[in-house]
Length: 209
Image (cartoon, rainbow, N blue to C red):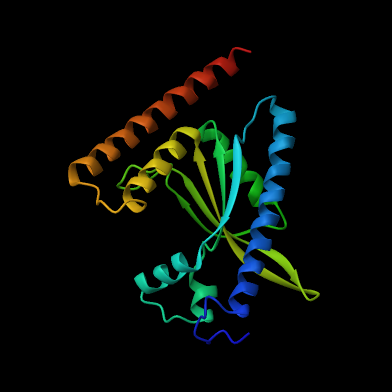
C-alpha cells in the first residue's frame, strides 16, 4: 500500500487498513477485559466498571484530517491520526484510573507513546480523564506491525458528563448557546468535586478495615 496515495474511503485498501485498526482495538479490548476480571478477583469489586471499543468512521477521519490541514493521503492518516482505533475504560474512582495506567505501563503488548492527564489538569470545558496513545503489535502476513490505539480512561461520573456533552455539541443541528456551554462547564466541575469527595470517603472506609 502506497502511503502517499489519495485516500479512497470506499476502496479495498481503505477497508483493509480499517481491519488492521479493528484488529488492534480488539486486541487491546481483550487484554483490558482480562485485567478487569483479574482485578475484580483481587480487590473484590469492579475496579474497571466497563470497557468499550470503537473505530472512527471514514467521514470522521477525513473531517479530522481536513480540520488539521493534513493532505488526504495514507501517510498522514497513519502517522498523524492517532485515535482511529479507540478503547474506553470506565472506573468507579479516580485512583482506580491510575492503578490501570500503572498496569498498562508494564504490559509488553502496549507501548505508551503519548499521554495526557486531564485528571490533574482538566480541560477548559471541565472535562476530566486520562488519555493514552499506545502501540500494540498486530500480525499481518506473518509480519508484526505496531498499530496505534487511543485508550481513554474516565470515572463513571465524568463519562456520564462527557457522553451527554458530546451529544449536545456534535450530534444535533442546533449549536449550543454560550450560556449552556458555561452551564456544562460548571456541571463538570461539580462532578469533579463529587468524584474527589467520594474517593476520599472510600479511602477513609478502607483505612478502617
